[in-house]
Image 1 (cartoon, rainbow, N blue to C red):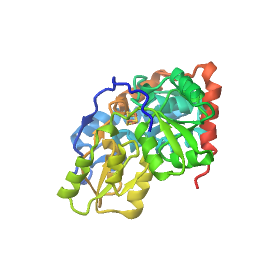
Image 2 (cartoon, helix red, strand yellow; image 1 turned 90 degrees about the vertical axis):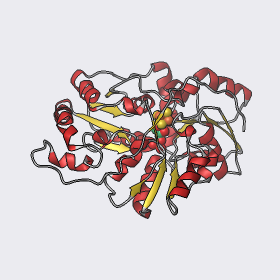
Image 3 (cartoon, rainbow, N blue to C red; image 1 turned 30 degrees about the horizontal axis):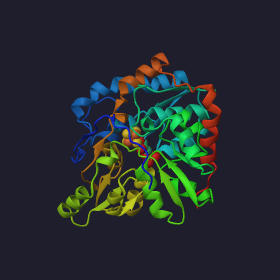
Image 4 (spheres, rainbow, N blue to C red; image 1 turned 120 degrees about the horizontal axis):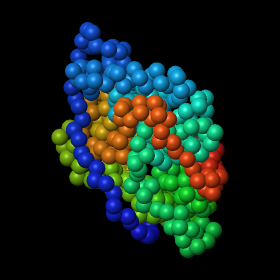
Length: 352
Ligand code: 13P
Ligand code: SF4
């Protein structure tokens, strides 16, 4: 593996315990009782009256503005389960963005996801409630870096993780997500591929595709890079028989210690299909919260880490975005066409 550089200005992520309280019956007199029932495991009844006015306003504004909310699986339960119209992993959000029939898209997630939605919907208004919601992977590489790589490795195709800016995508052959990275790399039918910027994702794909030489970059997700094999061993010791599911942005040694690895949507499918009694999702904390809300018989155990960028989204700023139609996401026309081509080529790859 080639290590080219690493950017070290990532914001520190925090570790938080998961709620493991059992849901209590919805107390009478609460506003929006049906919605509260969906999140009662994570939001105390006493806090709900403070959230309900924003939820009511968002539901009204969505109708008035002909807007939809696309929310990533890492959004907090009060967003994920009450106001979101479409939820999913990066791949699902990109796929669904193509089919959106609305004038306004609010992306509850991070900036690169909103940019992807805009690329696929150039005529629609795409809003992100807080434009500071970045990503350590997107920050790890620039378009100039990709041009330098191409000079150094002439003829080697560049597969770029969607967690990048439109300018970086525009310099790439095609994109991938954690849900289709193996299929995308194999679809090229070549012996050597540059896979940027997530070093760990590239190493995890390399383990599944030994027939292809994968060159990479030294970008990391600040949330997933913090998990260690010792974390997994500790949790296995404390909870014998626990099922461990790791996101492929984790270091390969962590993935090697896990029972399954996949994108956030693949994690959800695995849990829903296999129904392990105890599970640890080695990823962002809200992932387990969101699944737990609908799978009360499954116990979700630490460790998890919080993504400070995903957590910039709130009911309050989603409401504000819809009220004011800010903050609008635009893509520089000089890179839009190239970036759209890279995303569309990815969407055309069929799973094997
Ligand atoms: P998924 O595509 O698996 O949802 O992962 C994305 C991610 O890192 C979002 O931050
Ligand atoms: Fe980026 Fe990691 Fe946060 Fe996802 S979890 S947005 S990859 S920093």
